[in-house]
Image: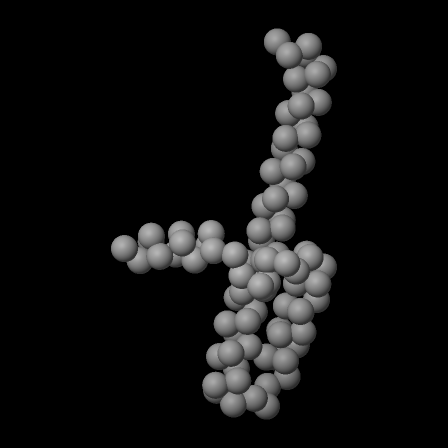
Length: 85
């Protein structure tokens, strides 16, 4: 049941899905910087950590998509080189 919920959560669009890779990465770096600097309450630190997790997922989706596009392009190039045989 928990696995099903995780799959639904992963598939559900979030406002972060509109972020480009570089923007999400920069926001993630800022979250990490704030956490490393300390000086925040436990509640603030938890909120930052949760935000960081969301941003990391956005970055991973972009990287996975880029990998899939590269793999598809390489496969198409290989098929073209062998004449589709």
